[in-house]
Length: 256
Image 1 (tube, rainbow, N blue to C red):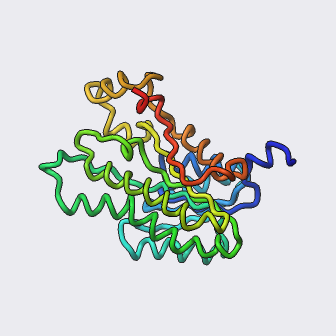
Image 2 (cartoon, one colour):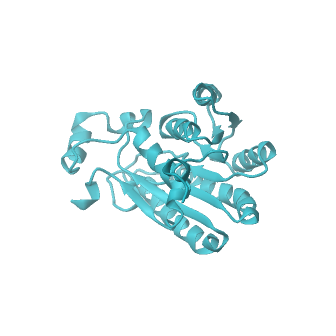
């Protein structure tokens, strides 16, 4: 049996990470690069992508950046096309890009609903369609979809977000059903509130955050690196028997 560092590492593999310019995506890029992966960083923010490249290179890793808007079909096609032009085989696909447009149900608009679904649910579907044929040919691959605890519980003012993440959880299970025979493991991670810039924007006020903290046995929100570390595990051979799972990383919130 190989050593634990080999089982838990991703040396020599190529990982495509969406939403890579900040927050959880940036930490995923750094953790995977530190564990030996080459990174293809995808995002809308060119400046942020260059910062991600710099962070990966500071870890002696290699990073190729792809600027693309995943809210559009063409943006998804562009991202997969440029990624595959750079690396004919992508071993790990991390569907991390996501948006949270917060509205009470009676005030939500169709346009904001559609935008949420496009980024949070349609983009992972389209990117997987483009990337998985290479995994099938190699008979190996890892897909990690960054979902949310809001995909398994309801939250006020989060109708579109909850629906998109619940859909992503079910998409993950269908990926498992269809692609496990090709030795492709597909899992979702469902974090609690993570204190990224987006998390701070939505949950920064104590009046809003304290009720959530009161329902969380650990009494705190998460850090981006904690999600990134779980991504590393699910991207490594140490997790080869785990597929079709929606793994909650929520400080115990859903146990209450």
